[in-house]
Amino acid sequence: MHQSLSRRRFLTRSLALGCSAAASPLLTPVTLAAAPGDNRLVVIILRGAMDGLDVLRPVGDPNFRTLRPTLAGDGLALDNFFALHPALDGLHPLWQAGELAFAPATSTPYRDRRSHFDGQDHLEAGTAGTLPPALQRDGWLNRMLTLLPQADARTAFAVGRERMLILEGQAPMTQWAPGTELDLSPQSRLLLGYLFAADPLFSDAGLTALDMTGMDLPDPDDDDEDAMMSMMAQPPEPSAGDAGALAAYVAEQLRGPTRIASFSLSGWDTHFRQERAILPALGRLQDAILTLRAGLGPDWSRTTVLAMTEFGRTMRENGTTGTDHGTGGALLLAGGALRGGRMFGGWPGLAEADMYAGRDLMPTRDIRAYAAWAMHDLFGLNASDLASTVFPGLDMGDTPRLLL
Image (cartoon, rainbow, N blue to C red; front, side):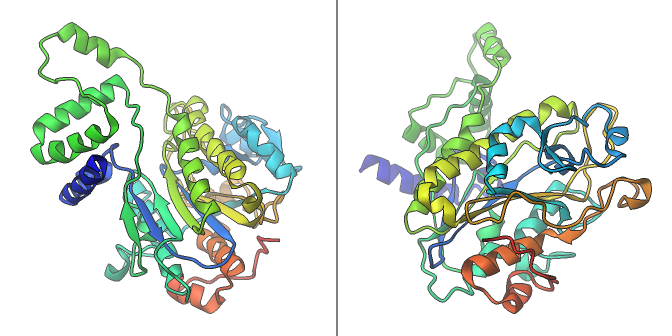
């Protein structure tokens, strides 16, 4: 009873936190929505702009190694042109089993400004151009739910530590915060201590959350400066297992009545020493997909996973052996319902004349079209409704035949 009352009190107070709550590592909101049938759809938002040219390496393109003398490794062969980043070796058997596929050179219609915030909003809102006021807080998965006549409020959800625009909108849904065991690094706990001391409102809600997890914070006014400096110097604890724990929870829900899930994985903004910087994010992505596969069991055969990012990265590596914000990227698809072991879409080439704005991979297809065709095949929705209601103004083009 005490935990139930604390949770209710915490959620009520957290409504007043606004952006502070959205950024807090203490919050793990879950949004429950709806979808009928036996097919499952999981959308993973890869925040920070995943480098599709590193994950899916076009080793058969003669310009690849010239553009990326440090980053252009060989990887694990997928076909006679593309290779998979070696850190994703656990996904290679899925490719061989027909449960993994890619759409190279794809992106949202968002162009040129290359802002993470705007790019992610466009990805989750599913719109082109400037976001209309009516869609600024409206996500494409939510709009899809309005087309399903058997929608209730308990069969789709978004999981994350920040606002998930993709499932916000008019379709009915319930929000709640599941219990979580926090394992914050010493410096993170110290930082929260300073935040709580500086913001009484944040402190009130945050300390209630900590009370539910049993964690104590250090006192930022502690006079033992040496002890505090020692704490700050400790390296953060690894968090690669977070994605697996999140995916395990999602799989558990999908084995029940839940049919649609969306969550996000961060860490893809690799401006500096990308060869090392991208490894934790790759590990989280691989862990999430393999955990979903194992946790879903027989239901994996009715599941499609779309891993999408807000935009790609520059074709040339920069002076710090990283990459900067670009345009064309890659879509990763997984699942037992997938016609995998193949590439969907075309390849524009990496020659100077083929670049977008003289620096980026040229997109050959709108990433929204792949999402629309996946929903068409999974849930039997009309293409005209998808191109008007879910993705306003989208030209879906011919079906890529994503699913079996």
